[in-house]
Amino acid sequence: MRWFTADLHVHTDLSPCAKSMSPDQVVRAAESAGVDVIAICDHNSAANVAAVQAAAAQVVVLPGLEVNTREEVHLVCLFDHLEGALALQEMVYRELPGENDEGIFGPQWLYNEAGDRIGLERKFLAGSCRLSMQAVIALVNRLGGLVIAPHPMRTYGGIIGVLGFIPKDLQLGAIEAPPSGWPHHSPLGEIPGVIASDAHRTEEIGPHMAFYMERVGLEEMKYAWRGLEGRRTHPKFLMVKEALGR
Ligand SMILES: [Zn+2]
Ligand SMILES: [Zn+2]
Image (cartoon, rainbow, N blue to C red; front, top):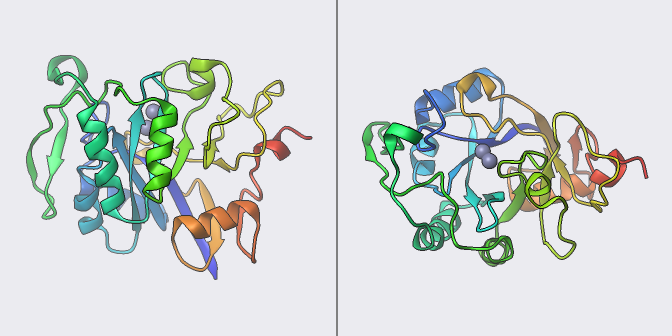
């Protein structure tokens, strides 16, 4: 086993709000920042994941997408294999209305595995799809993936910022720690925490947390969050419960 540094929330130029995030730029930035694992999660799409994986030399690229649900809550959905991410993308695309207006939201660049820009995604990726949080989580769990609630306190797309609370029955895999720390009044329960960049610029990508594990994979990461079988994370046991001092 060894330590793997990770940044589990990174966008590419497919996200209209990202800039200078070609697959090559993302991979070079991650590798020069000393990141072993990145998760690529563009808004409502996994269409550039294969291109980032093809550009990667040392860094391991986990496939994902950041789904914007019917409630306008963002959910980072990660997978071990590209097939899972693309299967979710297909279901999200079916429930994602509208066309992107580049003038307002910015371009959504698609890349091939050679690293070339091959065109613009027409779908309105910044929009919300018709799937509920529960539906997305059920789909991801069925596909063997993991759901992380990103930037929870943000009023745009953050689960607590939007809803005011985390529904008890929600099967979240983990939650991103807000930069300002956990709110002391929130009964969040025992959900593992993640520190990730949500990078829309290369300089934001970094080794924000680390996993001590056998190999890169979602099951290994789940063990690390729980401190099981020698696996662990740094910051150590970033559990919401512990952060709340209970
Ligand atoms: Zn987001
Ligand atoms: Zn994001």
